[in-house]
Image (cartoon, rainbow, N blue to C red; front, side):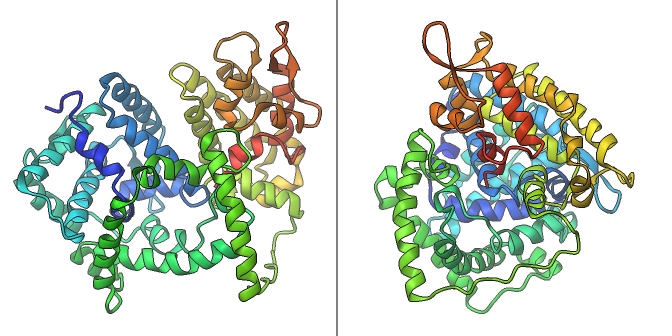
Length: 482
C-alpha cells in the first residue's frame, strides 16, 4: 500500500526536465485510446487553451501526489466530479465515459510506462526495485481516485503483457492523437509571457513544433506506430535520444531555474498581474520584446493575407465568438464550451460541493436559454452566424444567474463584497487597476475604508462581458487565456 509519503518518486519526477517530452508521449498514448480521445475532442480545451490546461493538469497531479492524505482525497473527489460530467458518444456513435475504469487505468499506465521509458532513453534505466516502487505508486494513485487497481495488473511482470496487448488491440489512430502530434504544436498559441511578440514566438515554434512531433513519434511503441501509419524520419531516433539526454543535463542548472511549478506558472501567467509569476513574466516579456524587434530587423516576416470567410460575421463578433465563447475550438458554441468555463472558474476558486455544482447548474441554465434564443436550425449547437444574428440573446435572466452564483462563490467570507484577496483568487491580477477599467463597474470603499467590489458591479461587468458588450474587463484574461 502507498503510505502518506509514498508518492515521493512521482513528486521527484515532476521536477525532472526530461518529464516534459515524456509527458507529451504519455498524452499521445492516452489520446489514442478511443474513450479518452473522444472525451478530449468533445470536452477539452487543450487545443484552444493549452497553457491553461497545462497549468491546471500540473497542479492537479501535484495535489494527487501530495504527502498529505487530506489534500489527495480532496483533489481525487474534485477529479471524480469533473470526470463524471464527461460522457457522450464518439463520432461513430460509440459511447464514452471518463469514469470508465479501464480507460482511467490506461491513463495511469501510460504515465508509468512513459516514466520508465524516459529514464531508459536518457541513458539512466531504472533498477528493478525502482520500477517496482514506481508501479506501486501508480496503483496507489488509482486507488486514491476510488478505483480498485484491478484494471492494472498486480505486478510489473504482468503489466508489460497488458500494456503490449492494449497497444496492439485497443489503441486507434484517433483525431485527438493526430491533433496533439501535428496540429497542436504547429498552431500552439503564444503563452502569456510571449503575448504581443509574434516574431519571437513564430521563430521558436517553427523549429520546436516539428521537432517535438518527430521526437514523440519516434518514441512511441513500434507496433502502434506502424498500424497508425506514423512516419519515422531518418535519423530521428538519434535526435530523440539526444533530446532526452540534453533535457537530462539541465538538471545541473540551479534548482529554481528548472522548478516545474515555477516554469508552468510563468508560462501560464499574464503579464500585468501582481503575483510573482506575472511579475517574472512581465520582465521576460520586455526582454523578449527587444529580441523580437532585433529579429524583425534581421529577417522580417511577411504579413499574412487575411483569410476569406464564407460567413458574413462582423470581425468583433467573430473574434469574441472564437476567443471567448468557443472554448473547445470546434467552431460552435454548445454545452462543452460553457462547461469548460464553469470548470475553469471552479478550478481557480478551488470550489468544493455544493458551490461547484451550483456553478455548473447555473451555466447549464444559461445554455438552455442560449439554445432557445440562438439555435435557429435546431442542430443542438450555435454557429458563429447564428450568434452574430442575435447577440442580444446572450444577456437573459440565466446569464444574470450565472453572474450571481459566481459572485457568491468568489465572496468566500459571505460579506456581500469581494475584497482584493478574493478578487485575485478568480482573476490572478491586481484589484485596483482592473476594477478601475471596467467601465464604471469599479471598486468601492467598505465601512472600514478597504477596497471592495460589490455584487451589483460584479454582475454588471460579467453580463456586459459575456454578452459581448464590454470588450475589456477582468474577465477577458480569465476566459481568453491561452
